[in-house]
Amino acid sequence: MAQMLSDVANRAEPEVASPSVTPAALQEVMARLDRIEKTLQVTTRHAAGTQARRIRCLFLIHHPTAWPAMREIVDVMRTCEDFEPVVMSLPHRFPLLQQMAGENEVHTMLAAQGYPHIRIRDAAAETALDQVRALGPAVIFRQAPWDHDLPACLSAERLGWDQLVCVGDGMNDVGMLERADVAIAYGGVHEPCLAAVQSAHYVVYDPQSLCRLISQL
Image 1 (cartoon, rainbow, N blue to C red):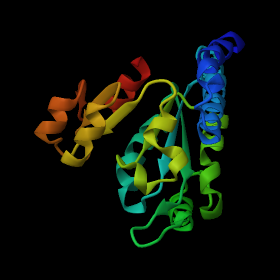
Image 2: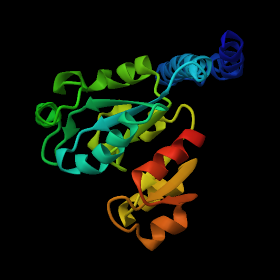
Image 3: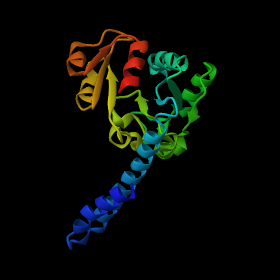
Image 4: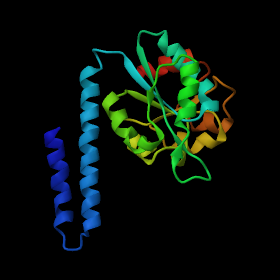
């Protein structure tokens, strides 16, 4: 890992040394190197532990009304010895508000239904990525195809340190499926639209089949 970081730093060095580089550009280079280092730490831990533990799947929940579709998958994984599902409650960005809010509503719903979960409270939204990295999940499930609903640190780009696997069923999911490394059209809630099927690498119709597919990725 140290050698990889050294190689990246060496490639970035000519740009940093250039007289035209601004302090803002230098800061961006350093931020990218920091993200690379943390990503390598996560993938190294995951590779070392793949044979020793179950597949840890993290479910990022910010939308209570969309929870039932995720819950069905969580329930199947809880009964399967191959998986370790972890649920995390998050705030989200309301259309008319600038700040993140609503985590307590998600927490209350999950607690009432008996689902243990990790809380990312409203004021701590931008620390969520550090918590995700600490968990080192093999697979991350996100409810929204749009980045703007979630804390900026949980964008698809920031979460995609290994491969981006997208599961969707509607027209609003097509863009997400098209840019995924692995695109799955899922018919567990209702029939996926034709465009989603055409954009997908795989099509599955129940949570058991989805879990089997994920275990083989």
